[in-house]
Length: 372
Image (cartoon, rainbow, N blue to C red; front, top):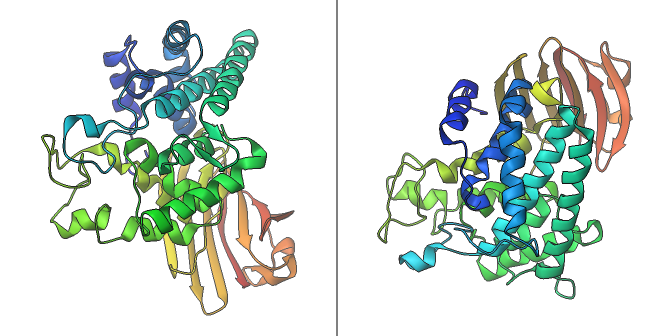
């Protein structure tokens, strides 16, 4: 959806595939995809059209999961493996229970949008119960890790807001240790973990490591596939075993990190009515430019470092509003179009957040400059 206009295609997909009651890692798309379409395109019709199916699916999973831990499915499909059918499956319970939680949360959020407050409370309560069960079953607080300590079992609780707030930083540190020490700077994830690994690392201040993972040239990595002649993402990290599709969309989810974290574009209201520009400015990149053709028009984020000077250019379409996070030591160091940013036309200073100065802007093109 960052690259192409997908609304009509995926709307038809949902109509064609409606009614499955399988595992969350297979049939959970009946719940998650309508919400993603709504969030991207801002059309409540996609929620109204699928709302009954979304509720029915979560209700079905709940009935057959009395302890709220879902133990069947594919799990973190096709993590680095031995090339045998059995080795394609990993972290099955952790992945499917996390997706079960995500589905319950999504139905609760959809109910709020559709003004069904009773259902919103019901599914929010269910999601809270799944979160509690997940942490009780998988979290090892003395080790600050989940499950068997695999990368994906640390990634999903951080990405999906399952991990307790006071444990998130420690779990992220364990994840980094696993990547750097146990796997020598490589990922060890299948489709579930790979989708979120870049987001999680950037969100916790490890953007340089995220880029390192994505650009490795040794197995397992995208760079290794490219060295072997890949022009599209594969179903396996290595071309072996009995299943070797070399044009498989399921591993391309990591590309979203390029837009949402390195470019920093994250919607905070459906249809990009309001969105963040919050780029992960890292030492190992000199510049990033992303463009997204939204339903409101083009959204663009472009940042470039030259010495200690950072320039961040932002384009906001008509009818939209952006919250721009400019990495800076203080508000006095930030300028927009040559003026102190807080005094620039169309720019409102919001305050400081972590190591960035935050500004709110309406439609237009803005050029923020600061020294780091």
